[in-house]
Image 1 (cartoon, one colour):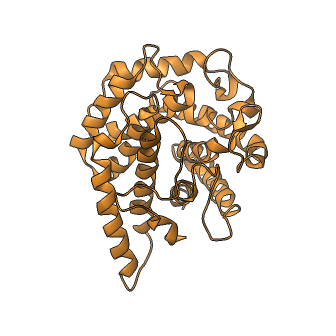
Image 2 (spheres, rainbow, N blue to C red):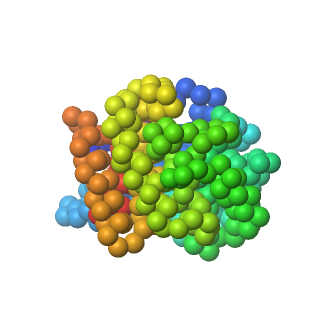
Length: 298
């Protein structure tokens, strides 16, 4: 599995990542941030007697960090830039680099839409929830996050919210529990971090995730929507952010949910030990997401 960490080109781009969208560099930047945050957190708990693996990781991290600090790698002006910034926050929060975090927050303030949301192709709750959670992480790390920026986004999510934390795919009426299962806990986490819902609401949204996981798992390796709003290309997005929501719980609910996430991830590796959802996103992204979830579920 560790070999998946080193599939990269000389400039640090993920070698097996071929996302065919306009904001190609933005998506790769976001994936890189996930991968590097994964490396740092995972290897903190992995013994290595020879030190050779750690040296390889240190060298890869140095190249990756240089890449992440280069904002010209981000395709500014495209909606998807919000993911590049949100996931870089996770990396630089782990590094405790407040100066870099402040710069990224300024970029997210600029890319926030008039309705308070952020966008992936179009404004939507799942991109907004992901950004809000990263902003909460940044704020805990000592970053200056404008209250009005958070307020506008959270109010938008709360307005869209239906029973069980259900959210629409884009705008309009909230989707069914099945169709919303991979974004309900994510969005309730963002609202919980803003004091607008209770921990019990986050737990209830996670129950909806588990009730419908078999439907999402059935389309995991499909590259587009294959069951109404469910699509494989958002599989790891849903798993990772739902696991983040579980981490916000306490006591038995936290323990039980994280144990379920660990069992879920360990049930779906590829034959080479890697992980994948959409083939367009590739093994590096899927494996990074899987290892982040496993690290959090220890």
